[in-house]
Amino acid sequence: MDYQVIFSPKAVNDLEKIVRYISINNPEVAKTIGQQLLSKAKELSNFPLRGQIVPEFKAPNLRQLILKPYILILLPFIIDVPKTNF
Image 1 (cartoon, helix red, strand yellow):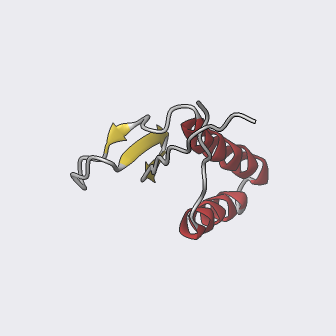
Image 2 (spheres, rainbow, N blue to C red):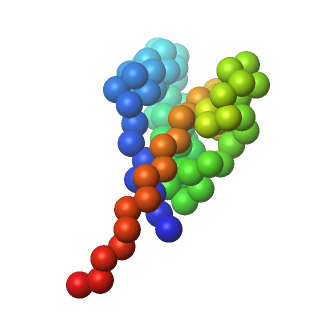
Image 3 (cartoon, rainbow, N blue to C red):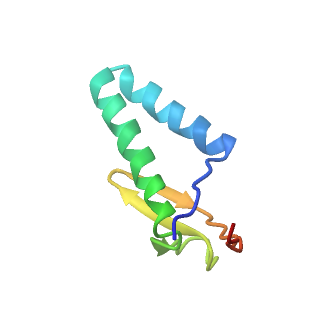
């Protein structure tokens, strides 16, 4: 089952800041890293509980995905929607 990945406004803002900062010295690398970070987060559509529990926060639903040197901190919400037959 595929799930929808929705980015919070803060997540989008943080990603934009990362890409802008890297692009000061290397715009091509900035674009690549931005795409890799988005791709990593979108993998959650297939595996929403993927990643490690974040030890600093001790919250069982909070997960982290690592794309060195970045750590994506995620709070997955899974909402089951019943399928209907038409």
